[in-house]
Length: 620
Image (tube, rainbow, N blue to C red; front, side):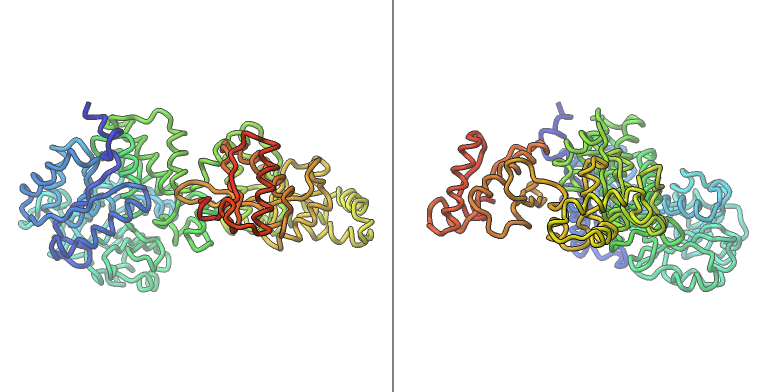
């Protein structure tokens, strides 16, 4: 059964990055050996962003038919072929013939990767400027592989072919021009225009996939109102963004450069379109899959950014608008959204030979690749969704908290309660572009105007009056300490859980909790447990924050409590008691204490998997 190779061997997760080095970005025809570092870099991006294994293969062959024969013979080894840096028009021939001969995805990234990102950028830019894609006029510079593919994509998205005029280094592509190849001839028009300066007059969109500096400021000035400029030549764009905005402040501009907003970067696409294609064993990457990828990228740029996504933008996630029409390649949400969209499109269009039965589980698996703690949190999230609890966030004005609440609301994980000043919370929600409303999505508690304030401070005073807390001090503390308010809400049954500690000192937060909330019966002291995630999974550590020198009894007590918490995550505890000693190698005070703790734990729960005392490297 040949189809079983996808699951019984590594083939289903293996892509070949293949080049003959005839069109390396910014370097030209440098040859296959000189191109190898670029191909190796491409392989790293596949693995980093999508977990796909790659062999980079550099072939010393320029004849397209021979190149096709060599690549086609590799089909038994690979689940997909990524063609890279092959010059036009040979690249069109090679890709077309390989797609006809091979039953695995063949994808020329220079063409289709660029076209997908351009498509997403144009869709979103048109939303920003309020124009209909069917009515816009496009002036293009460059009729190579990427340029033609971009135009094909724009037509697929709704641009009318008759609204497109193209120019290359030899002038406008007009009907009857003798030097046009078949691909360029498709965009030859019956026009008297012969220069880029002529065809750009009144255009809504400029698409540049050509050479630096070819677009002059006066050309941009002649474009239609609110023009869209895609200047994608690298390393020097067709026009610098500052120069374009100097003559047209109303323009939206994208480049191929990471130091300018709106970078059109193929890394936004190729790892994820292959991830989705491989996961359904697609026989090809068709137009439906590419368009699905376009729309997923465009939609992602319009979504509110979570806290994790915000980190990809230096902690300050941009808002959808003229300077943010496409995501950054480092946005961690890309894998889940794009691969899912591509896989679904492959199934809907009939090219998936191994359809995914449970798309929800598939999304979770992709999410777990990006967010390492996902598998451990899955049972917790499932229980939370079944019966959402009231969770009070004591630092409700913090941006990280607000982003977390956005995700909690979207996923239906809890009923959030935010403590803070209404005007500050509302202003920050608007500034970071979240879709949250007090009353609709969360309860907002402003202690300065909350009618429960008197009940809160009086209850706290009763608890703390024997520790020197006067009524005036009780009022002051309850008014200013969010952790104290949250603890009182828990004690009064007005919340089920509390999250605090984004700002301030841990010890002070703990003191307020212990003032209000009693320990469980039989527990002598609290302990803190921290989780560390890596490629091998989760490792939990305690006590990381509270007890400086716990007794053997307290260690045993905390260990047993921690084991119960791990079981809530669906994790079977395997516990190591750490020391400077390895199983009796030393008799220090700490080693003796850990041995005693081991005896106590085994006496209470004989079947618990626990060992010690041992050194940390032994445990890990």
